[in-house]
Image 1 (cartoon, rainbow, N blue to C red):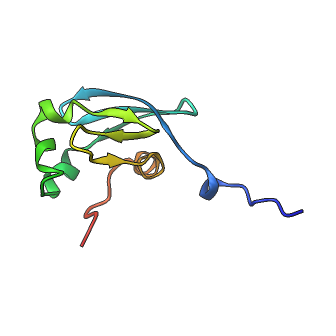
Image 2: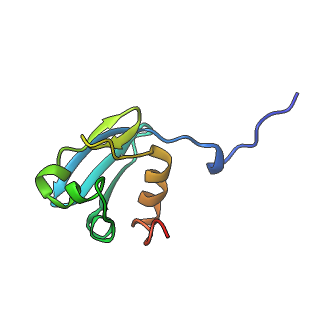
Length: 99
């Protein structure tokens, strides 16, 4: 019988809760109880387009919610728990995300 390898590569991370702390900083709690604060301002400032432009308004950004273990906004933009956890563990969102 083969057993899957263990380690971080195989872990799936789900967001349990999110709280807007100040401006564009979110406190994110994962299913394992670990909590991180992450500043989304540099990411929002570097992105454009119909999905990202609404997030530049702090009131709209604050409408973030958890759906299916991911962060989501009312316009459908979502960030999966695994990618989000990687960003949290490195302490920032890599720039640029595309190109």
